[in-house]
Length: 105
Image (cartoon, rainbow, N blue to C red):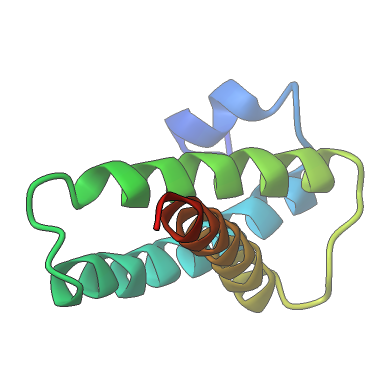
C-alpha cells in the first residue's frame, strides 16, 4: 500500500520523505507572506497588475527553497524560513523599484 498521497508519490523519486515534509511546511510560509505581499500591493494602489509581483515572488521563493532543500541546506523551522526567503525576495524587488524610480527623477 502506498503511504504517500498521489502528488507526493510523483515527487518521491526526487525528494526524500523528510524533504517533502520540509517543503510542505516552507510552502505555507511562502504562501502566508504572499498574502501579506498581496495586501501591500492593494494598499499601495497597484490594482492593475497586483498579482504579477506576488506570483513572481512565489515562484522565485519556491525555486530557491526547493533548491536549498534538495541540497539539505535548510533551517530547523521551515515555515519561518519560507517566510524569510519570500520577504527577502520582496525586499530586493522593492529596492530595485526604488533605485529605478530614483534614477528616473
